Length: 215
Ligand code: SAM
Picture (cartoon, helix red, strand yellow):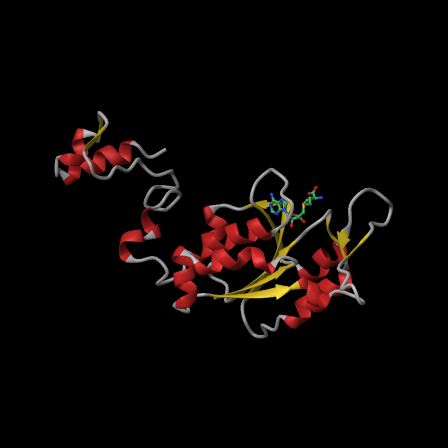
């Protein structure tokens, strides 16, 4: 799978692409992330990507031409591509969304800024709009990272056996519920004890205890 990220601020993605499980997945070629810096498609000497909204009102809008050109630069012919705009007005991102998106060959993520994006871009170029929650952020970069992180960890070979996503919150194995609490050594820390059953070695009882704590 490959992501194309259309953004004014590609630098924000640097650490995300380098560290931890996502960094490992990229180095192991389990996934690809191509940054598409929008400034490169800006107009005129100042590489302008925004303009004032028709009808007045505060703020600036990302304008059509740079965004159409950026989309046209992303070639993904014959592939199963999905183009997504991150926006508070979109449908809420859930584990089911991540599972569905993990089936595509290529995903284009458009990160908005300012007041948002000219509606004609959305009408012509975008398949779906996704929100990561009911709050407003300054830009679509953090939402794009949230979407990619949730999808990438589901891709084959990204998580090791012990890190498997089959036994995570919202998984089928947990009937869509949230996971039980975890403890690690020592068995007692500053008087705080690990539940006795987890030390018992009785796997049937441990399983019963865990199932009882799914929320
Ligand atoms: N005027 C927009 C509104 O009221 O819905 C908010 C624009 S916001 C300041 C700038 C950009 O941040 C948006 O275009 C979008 O790409 C991104 N963004 C902000 N909050 C978001 C959220 N909850 N989910 C996804 N994207 C978000």
